Length: 144
Image (tube, rainbow, N blue to C red; front, side, top):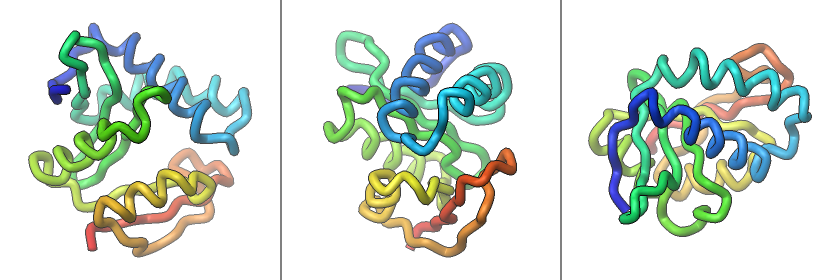
């Protein structure tokens, strides 16, 4: 596996990974929520972050991260790649090479919370609403 920069040509594959990952891990989102978020991710959020992808030795995209300032804004892994070190590699890269010190995580996503705690983050705050003003509470985490 190698970590590489992403171009706009990769966006169609990235949005497929995003959707598959969200469907596997964000069971609190409705179909309407996912369909509303998808164009925002593709048309706005990808361009607002520095994207890094994990590629297999054969060149297949396995997952990706997105960083803005000191915040890990996105970390999505193909469902079949979860638990194989892809997310850990992307997170460690974001911390070591992109200056990440914080991340927000949905409170209803306990697997992600556990992952970030294992990666060295600790809860420093909580918001009742997500970044779009929806009633999906966020936990604010910072490197411990």
